[in-house]
Image (cartoon, rainbow, N blue to C red; front, side):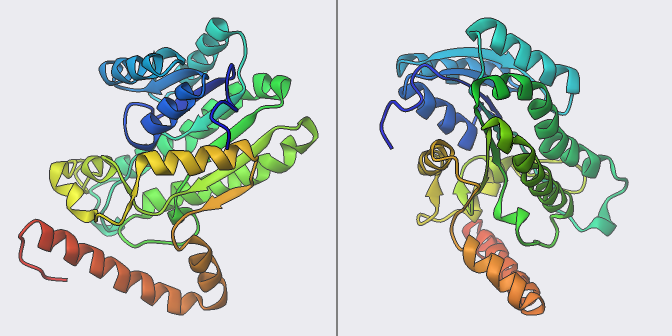
Length: 283
């Protein structure tokens, strides 16, 4: 992909304060794009905005809680008012809670996860659509391999990603006549602060110990952003990273065996995390 294919284009990136979203914003800026940065923490967004400007792009900071429909509407309106148009929407904001469904004291965290991961993407997309239709633009949905195969102890996260796939696959068909593309990105393990922010059944983030799940072989956020933007530029339907294609076919051909494989995979992951933290391993 050329280094300036998005030059002069206007993009909104949600979840832009860290991780994949931050890397996407910085890469777009380096290509000369005008980027509207959305996330809840204004201070972190200002840091990303400075990085965008130092790379030659323009940046607009719009603190946004995507679970609030009115804030999503304002995000789009401010972007268009500032830059005059909208060429790409990147729905990247997301969070996760890890717990068994039976262990939740109520469903507040479950509903909050759905509100951020799924409805946040729906809200932003709805208000961005008229402008994207006008520009024959691009919609990018950062999902997960969890949108293709289930993972125990992650029911709200997985449910939100399955919902995203259904929504955006349907929207893609509706947008064909307008020339608006819809690309779903399904990362595997990417080294970010995501697992530090991942909450337990009581809403308490894991903190720095969450990073113990990562290894040196895992993809960086910068590399993830590169391949994601390339897929968006080519207007691909879907990008499966890591063992994504294998997992999709495996689940289709042998779903029962896939369930057992997922359980074994999760046990291995938990064991590695506990060993990295020097904890007693009981899986």
